Length: 329
Image (cartoon, rainbow, N blue to C red; front, top):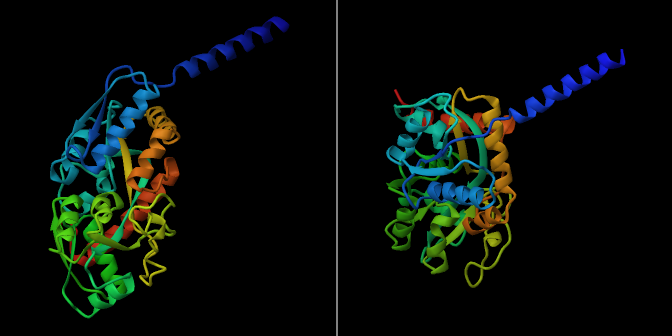
């Protein structure tokens, strides 16, 4: 009897050891696919993660970063989902993964991906030229409600920036002439030169012009003020910028997630491996420095929490796209 129990215990231990050793890990080079051009926000996001993984030896397999930013990122998504079940293609992007197919016919479907993680949330602010007569969001919105023809610039059309402008108009009655540019960087330059009246850029897109006293932030679309830090200008840090809601704009939050995806059909073990790696990245000093430098909110989401966020974000965008007549036919 004792011998039988001993053999059973040994077999159980062997099976447990085999299960532990069978956990999936990549054994050949992994492609990190960037859905933007070199130097863009998604490119910096991806390469920061890649460098942290290598520096901290969080993954044994080599990583190859590939930029495919054509078509507002759709080129990267087409490539990333082209081989279903392929655990060696990891795609980096934003919420445009699930929003682009709503407004245009794409060579991929959002269902062609499995979400891995969201690593951070980009904040959006209302910015004006430093010579603007509007010193706060309330006066700016009141002027726009009067139909003063205020020009609001942003990155791309029917994308996150124009969606936010539509939400502002719907919530306040303000009217803007939206002018799309190729990037947030271009929108920043146009505002600094007073060729437009405002934009809704992320902090990192306008920080250079703010430091140079060429533009001024009015409010941030966040539930709470941004993290305290050193002064950006002589008089202000990010935490000195009021939220839009406390400034009288009835929109509590509008943020863009920095997302990571695998092709549909990969095993749960593959998803777990990469989400665990990204969770470790998020704990490093280098990642915290990246978050501080880019003035993002360091929120990590995976699993059910991320899927719930995607569902809610999609629903909000869908209602805007439908109201504006942007939905793909």
